[in-house]
Image 1 (tube, rainbow, N blue to C red):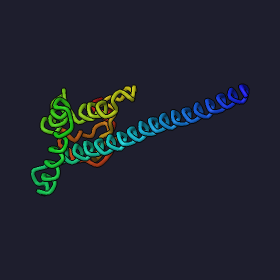
Image 2: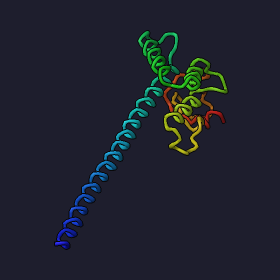
Image 3: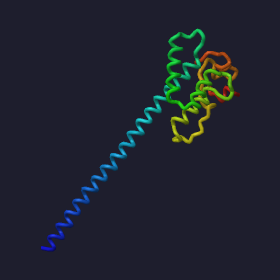
Image 4: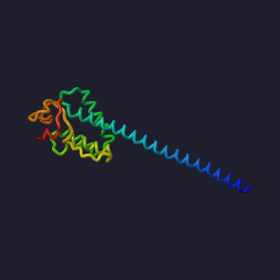
Length: 165
């Protein structure tokens, strides 16, 4: 009889330990799954916010006095939206890139890089610089072409580093 009680105790202990192991595994899998879903949601948010900043900069850099009123309304709405979530320093840099087109300290590229660093949160250790960002306007591939900030309309492709040469 004592052997039967010992075997019964070992068997029940093994079953209890097995159940605990399954429960712990399930909790760990749920936690891992939750982190994965949070990361996916953050990546989607990053893509949406990056698209908003890009659309705003593209629209706002091309606004002219004779642009349709709808373009001004859209740019203003986007500006307000950016003010809601961008940190003050980055929002001001983005605003200044639009409002002060000739300022050598702040331009569309520095604004894009600042937002990029904010959204990537250190996940990217690359060295993308504002001079690496392509601009689009007529005759952009020709060295002697004027840049958009010098009064040319937009539509070709030009690397900003080559613009400065």
